[in-house]
Length: 461
Ligand code: MN
Ligand code: MN
Image: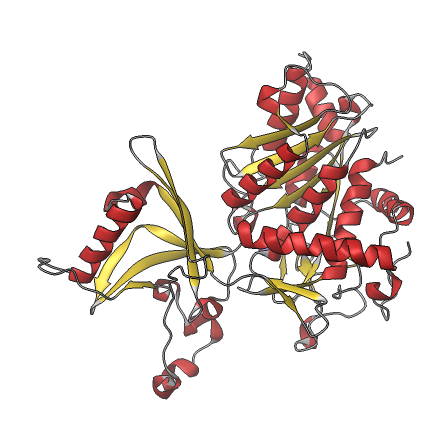
């Protein structure tokens, strides 16, 4: 299909069958958003769903041949779906990489304290947030405690309708005269993001009776001791559910759509890839929001290790083939871009910015100032992607992250390109990105799915 005319909407071009499919995909997407609010929960969902669709754990695969469907996971935080192609692997793979971490508020290693009759948790935010958006909303606590015994205790509190939730307080307007004069970046400071978790004192406690009572509850109900927080990962995320937005129900609102909208749509596509000529790899990674660092981020050798594992399973010992595979691959950095916001037109350049409901967003370059830290995709590769959009009836638009010199950002594209593979950003336009309630268009969710399916199923000549 053609590039969506800037004045038209993807909704105008969808027929009855496509609209039905679109609603089905978005319904499941809502379920995914509500079940998978952390990278670990996303991995659980993706691996379980793939096994239900006849993917085999790569650890259980004795040998590998064309047509095989494999699932790979590492450290419970990243995973990949692989559909082996007819062509030799060293000819290259078609790789789609999204990230399953999202901005949030993490607990510190020693979080619990009592102040003025309240029990609170100290926190450290993760990723780029506007801190003032995270106060006075219900927060759910998700995480895992790794006990010295080797036991891992999973915790999810605040997602069921009758669960308790947590919250960060803010000053009442009556007393906020000084606060209201501050810059938005200073209204709420990082060390002020302390989460209210209790107000009931334990009888006969020697000191800090409210904290003592919380410790008692944590121990009795969750088997958590104070020192266990040092070997735990706890994340506070918005407790509310993802919902349809608008009288026309045309949009999806919810937490973590950057980048679970690309994760879900590429997952959905990968499940449907059958006997491709080129091996398809659908990758879900962690730590993008803090620079793709750590051993679960794309600055690590995780893609290389995955391809090496595939060759090992095929009995291939020539390591150069791993490098050939990566250098000969085509890749999509499946990540979101900022949707044009009519409330803030001054930061966008209308001709090159993406809009909600105008299709999947092809972003040649990200970066800031003079394209600093951008991957800047090669036009030869972009021509192949345009041809693919024609073949797979994908409505699309170009994207750029705001006006030149206004700000900027990056994605995993730059880290994938290290290997020599061709890579470009392709994803969904998001309104209120990085906020507790991000908004996308159902039509764009559907188009992203079509684009990823076409890419993973195709031989890109
Ligand atoms: Mn992202
Ligand atoms: Mn982001």
